[in-house]
Length: 70
Image (cartoon, rainbow, N blue to C red; front, side):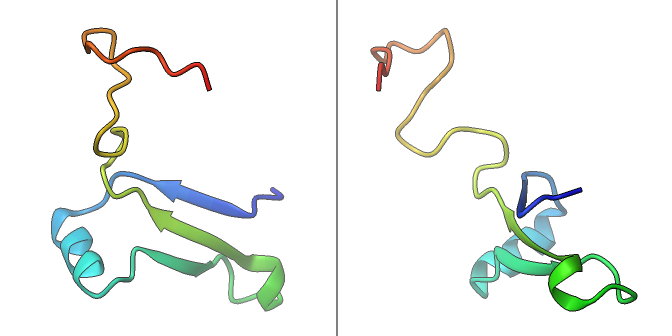
């Protein structure tokens, strides 16, 4: 499909804890053993806060943070 990378936020809490402690939150995902290595490899990572923004940011309409106009 042409993707270079994939990030996701939902995984088992024990898997996430294990990966975080071993610093393995990012990996190369081999999509198929039948395809040549570079064609089937996908850089993959787990979002550290699930689908929430990074610590220190609040992008919710209920927050009192000023808008970030870049």
